[in-house]
Structures are given as C-alpha cells and as structure tokens.
View 1: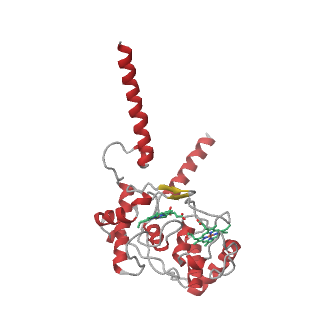
View 2 (view 1 turned 90 degrees about the vertical axis):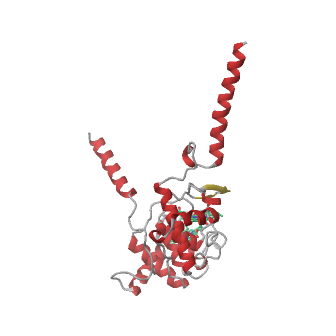
View 3 (view 1 turned 30 degrees about the horizontal axis):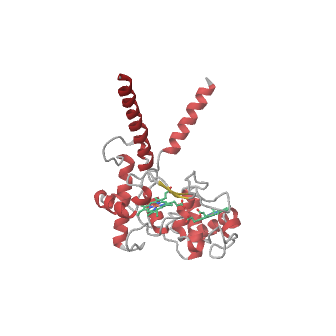
Length: 265
Ligand code: HEC
Ligand code: HEC
C-alpha cells in the first residue's frame, strides 16, 4: 500500500517535471530582469560562476580555460546565449574536462540563477544578448522548407536526430523549446555550424529572425504532428533502422515463401 502510494507520488512528481513550461516566446537581453538590479544580478552570476564553472573554464570567462586543449574558453562559444542553452538543457556544469557533452539533462540551476550566469558571462565576454524567437510569428510551411535545406541533413526531416560519427550525435528536436532552437542556431554548439546552415544568418537581422521563427514553428509542429511520409513510421528513426526492418520482415517473408514452395514438391 505504502509502496503503491510512493510510486504514485513519484509518477505525479515526474509528470509535473515533464510538463513543458508554457510560453516559448521568451526573448530579450539576459541582463534585464523584472525587479532585480543588473549589478546585483551580475555579482550573483559571478559567485555562481566561480563555484560551478571556473574550475574548468578558468577564473575569468573572458580568459583562457584551465584545460585549453579540451575545454573551450567561454569567450569564443557564443556569449550569454551559449551559457543559457548549456545550463538550461542541463549540459553544464559538465562532469569531465573532455567533451562532447551532448545529452540533455535536468538543469542544476533555477531560472534566476541561470539568468545571473547568463548576465555575468555575457557581460564579461561582451555578448549578453539572447536571440529572439516567437514561433507564433512563424510560418510552418516556410519553416519546413528552410529546415529541409539547413537542418534536416543532421537532425532528420522528422526531427528525430541522427548519429554524426564518433561520439557525436545531432540530438532529437522533439523535446526542445523554441528558445533552444534560436540559441542553438545562434551559437552552433559542437558539430553544429553557427547559423545552423541558414544562408547568411546574423542574429540581429530581421530576415534571419523571421527564418528562425519559421523554423521554430516547424519544429514545434513536429512535436504535435509527427512528420510522416506514409507507410509505417517504425519509430521514425531514419533510414538505417527502417531499412533493417525491411530486411528482416522482407527477407523473413521470402524465406517462408521459399520454404513453402520447397515443401510442396
Ligand atoms: C568539469 C569541467 C567543466 C565544468 C565544471 C563546466 N564545464 Fe562547460 N565545458 C566543459 C567541456 C569539456 C566543454 C566542451 C563540451 C563539448 O565539446 O561538448 C564545455 C563547454 C561549455 C560551453 C560550450 C557549449 C557548446 O557546445 O558550445 C559552455 C557555454 C559552457 N561549457 C558553460 C559552462 C558553464 C556556464 C559552467 C558552470 C555552470 C560550466 N560550463 C562548467 C567542461 C566543464
Ligand atoms: C552539421 C550538422 C548540424 C546541422 C546542419 C544542424 N545541427 Fe543542430 N545540432 C547538431 C549537433 C551535433 C548538436 C549537438 C551539439 C552539442 O550538444 O554540443 C545540435 C544541437 C541542436 C539543438 C539543441 C538540442 C538540445 O538537445 O538542446 C537544436 C535545438 C538544434 N541543433 C537545432 C538545429 C536547427 C534548427 C538547425 C537548422 C537551422 C540545425 N540544428 C542544424 C548538428 C547540426
């Protein structure tokens, strides 16, 4: 009885944690908060940085890292947007001095502490701007086209992701928020190119912002209406596993037919 209750409570907590926060349309400058003073926010960010990041990235975000061959200096990775993305998606603080840190996890920081880290590192490296995004302003059909050109080679047309060789994967986009899309495009984490392959992307340019909104709208649409060209989706894992299924089922059927024909004589 108690175990069942505990289990139910656990499931309840998990469900709450898994419900995505609403309102993807978050935009703006990391260093601005509703009530807080920017100086205070930066001071708090600095304290958090020294505790949680400096051991690998160095005491000054704008200086050399402690392990220059494997840990990047935060001056070259995309400013506040990179910190915001890496911390919100639970990738940082990392547990090792060697990457890649690809898997998403639960963030170790709440929204305010994340904002403080963004503001501190952003101001230290001279880029405190988070990219703008609002999928409600985007167009899914245009987004599908732009995504097909820029993103699908790595993340798959259905957003399921794919292996890129070595330890690198292009992760699934079926659980990302619009802000993740805009930040990843701005910073180009890991093997992803900055701009995500969007032709002549620049973060502040109106045309680029419109394209990011379109792509964010398309990615969001994949999360409610899976991309499917017809036939069985087979988990939507891409051509290799799908081909594998075809081989097993197709060949299996062939073998049965051959045996049946052979058995008749
Ligand atoms: C134990 C070492 C370690 C700690 C602690 C650590 N990092 Fe990192 N960080 C790394 C490594 C290694 C990489 C390179 C990861 C990769 O190649 O995927 C990295 C990469 C990054 C990147 C670039 C991400 C990208 O893919 O472009 C950012 C931003 C970052 N760290 C921020 C932080 C912040 C902020 C903290 C503190 C909250 C932190 N890190 C703590 C080791 C660490
Ligand atoms: C060359 C391959 C490549 C291309 C092209 C590419 N990506 Fe990526 N993308 C990656 C890789 C690799 C990562 C993981 C990087 C890491 O974790 O360090 C990634 C990460 C992401 C993330 C973060 C996912 C998460 O779990 O937080 C998003 C969102 C994303 N990409 C969206 C896009 C969009 C949208 C486009 C097109 C505009 C695009 N990518 C183009 C390879 C690519």
